[in-house]
Image (cartoon, rainbow, N blue to C red; front, side):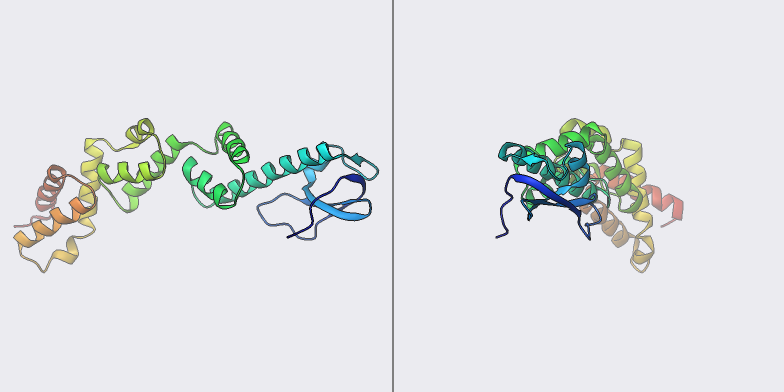
Length: 220
């Protein structure tokens, strides 16, 4: 276990040689000529820390709490940099990193205020991405978004309408038609309906998509 931070007179503030890419610049804080703790450089500046300042136990605790929130926020930003996430996903990541609940709540609140975390937007982008690359029926989309922790109203607002779902089903079938060409028409139909239903499209949507594809491709 590392040494615990301790109060006293600040004798030096030294920049850390290396900083993880998702964190801002950090300082090593020396108290009574010994290393005590590391701190976000911006926080140190805002709190007026410099050599000669007396750091009591109460102020030290406040600094460490604020610094923890800053690091958790930076970690959340890094997590969000790879793709849009739901609030539940960000919370789970921060919990995995063992941040306390009060820090997690503060970080989520800040991200939402800054419009960097928005479950309604996340749901819309999730559905759009699915429609473009791996079409799914509304049943599967609804289940996926529930698992991501998105509230019901945001889910329903993001789901495709009837016409969009029909187009998604048709697009999914077009991507598979070539692999079914060696089968008889009856087998092609069975494969098409089964394929779409496994992707969450109901039977009526699946059947309509197959009939439309038959017309387009002049399948007998």
